[in-house]
Amino acid sequence: MTKHQGELIEIVIADLSSTGDGVGRFEEIVVFVPDTVPGDRAIVRLLQVKPQYAHAQLHHLLQASPHRVRASCIVADKCGGCQWQHIDYEYQLVAKHDQVIQALQRIGGFVNPPVDLVLTTDAPLGYRNKATYPLGISATGQVQAGYYQKGSHRLVNLNQCPVQDPRLNPLLVQVKQDIQQRGWQIYDERKHQGQIRHLGLRIGRRTGEMLLTLVVKEWNLPGIEQQAQEWLKRYPQLVGVSLNRNRHRTNAIFGSETRCVAGVSYLREVFADLEFQVRPDTFFQVYTETAEALLQVIQSELDLQGQELLIDAYCGIGTLTLPLAKQVRQAIGLELQPEAVEQAVFNARHNGINNVTFQVGAVENLLPEMGIIPDVVLLDPPRKGCDRAVINSLLELKPPRIVYVSCKVATLARDLKLLCQDGLYDMTRIQPADFFPQTAHVEAVAFMVLSH
Image (cartoon, rainbow, N blue to C red):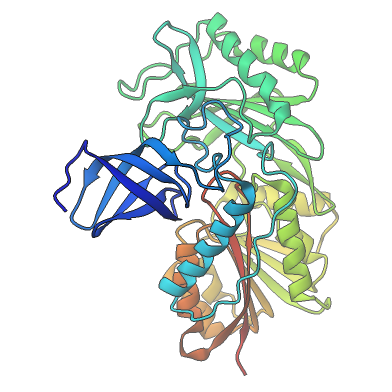
């Protein structure tokens, strides 16, 4: 094909990629087009043409897919926060189901993987219990907060966001104005100058308690204590205001130090009938209700009898460890972050759970040294999946059951292939779950039993 950048072509969208773009073919090459839906017939403009594939942008629709809907957000086509607001929710679930099957077949080499329908709870909008907005300045000097435009560092200013908990929306507008009035300098990432980098908002879905956090380059923010007190007065649900310092040139949002300047340093959240303390930088699933529904699937599939020894690798603050600990003889949580373990220990004590211990360190170092064979190992690694040493330890330990909770199906498929090779483990069930409606992300939990 001798097509060039800038040319217009007609294309029919047939599929969705794992990053959420529509996929079609033109002659011999695959074309990726954001903001399209399988079934769309469209004219697209080529942006980048390679021998095997091309990236393009939607120029105009000739015929809309039956799965196309009107986005509920006025900036959905610009904002990089969501990819799929223009796709009807039922079809989003179909696409995520396919994504899991394709990864297991293509990367894992599984022929007929036992993948259930995607688990979902009621609300495809207004579900996020946490939002972290980069801040910027408009051409007219106004403080802005929003998400970056797709594939760029241009900020799309938001006054509300339909995927975050609606109780956080009033803070978004007002806090920008307060920052403006205080004259606090907004950070400029190109020059590495200025002060305020991000605005973090967090809410306990069940308790309604909120936290407000400003990510700053340095601690000295004149008048922050007084402003924080004003925020606590104005928003009765706001329980704490904190600063987090990130002085590095980096894409990471949070730095390693957080200081509470007013109220308390955590909010309370109820999860699986337990009360957790969640801090501004704690990892906690953004969709509380679906995370709870997935925990129930894990509990019913494991059918714990109260005699088991369970190891929760990558346990965080104990979100899954503690509810499961109530159903086993003993639970051990392994976690790299000392601050998370400190919170996990507190959460266990606070909920009167005393058959659980936590160890700080890398799972690949801790697991081989434990000298015990657990009945169940729960894995909940970050997006990069399990370190190869973790897989090797499991193949040596041979625990009777492994439960693998994954936030990236490509690395899940890779790791399952290693665990199931040579027929050592049988994969009995995969349960995908939609923790991020309106985006291409899908979580999944895989259940494995030792072959006898």
